[in-house]
Amino acid sequence: MTLMTFAYLIAGLVLLVAGAEALVRGASKLAARFGISPLIIGLTVVAFGTSAPETAVSVQASLNGSGDIAVGNVIGSNIANILLILGLSALVAPLVVSRQLVRLDVPVMIGAGLLTYALAWNGGISRFDGVVLLLLLVLYTAFLVVASKNEKKRAQNDEFAEAYGVEGTDKPYGWVLQLLLVVIGLGLLIFGSNLLIEGAVSLARALGLSELVIGLTVIAVGTSMPELATSLLAVYRGERDIAVGNVVGSCIFNLLLVLGAGAVVSSDGLSISPNALSFDIPVMLAVFAACLPIFFSGYRINRWEGTLFFGYYIAYTLYLVMFSTGLPAISLLRHAMAWYVLPLTAITLLVIFLRAWKHQR
Image 1 (cartoon, one colour):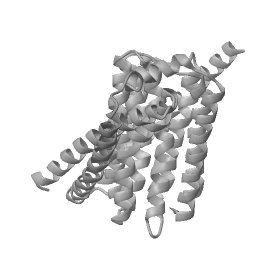
Image 2: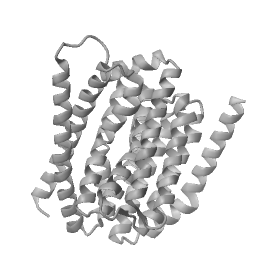
Image 3: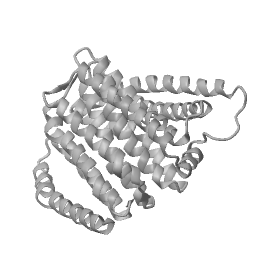
């Protein structure tokens, strides 16, 4: 392992974040120029933009034959989105959860996760499965556009417009600069993903870690930097519902777009390792399911719930590293999580959900 390995990792992450930022800004301005509402821009263009690093890395990894990195990147990013990003954001300030997220987007996120698990049950996601995922993404996006026309949400539109700067006067030839930002952003994403994959593979080999673990940890956190930056910035600006919507939308795009595109470009589809099927995907589904009772209770994420999310992410990461390196303490951590922490958490979430449901009635 050389300094060049770390240089590739750091340079790749920096280029991915810069590329995603340029892509989001340019695409948002262009969409607004064509009369697309800021709300839809936030739920689609921005969600796609913050998922662009995952897309670039997973597609490139699929083309290079590193399917474990592609799959681990998606699963790990989704787990990091909920546990790490929402956890840290809620620690900064309690987060507001819109009713639409609880009624529509979170169930869609859980449904997309269950569908992915079902498609991967035979050990892989084929090209046909990838096409199905991409078609579902098109249907979901079209539904959002139609729903936004049927129900005017001026207050939310103002929040997204303020957050992403998509309203106001624009220069006559401003579209040239906006198009240039999109092109530059895409270029940075492609170049950055190549550097990140090369550095990650070298790091995995040097540390004796599998490509799946590297994808679940180092690359997953790295490609989730745009979501983290967007959510923390939204919290800082006081737009705390945008922070949650950005994360949920990104998780949906990761499953439908990133996995779908990765499976389509790969000649044999994406292979799913037994470890991912037996542990990592169920963890992702459990994290998704935990969102419903927490979001439903008062339509907010409190600081103690953010602490719970963040603590679980630390435990999950420690488990991956211990399991991959064969440390003897892994059995102690596994028993503590299985027999104490997880049951207590499940009981707590059930009580929270029942109290919120009783209050709603």
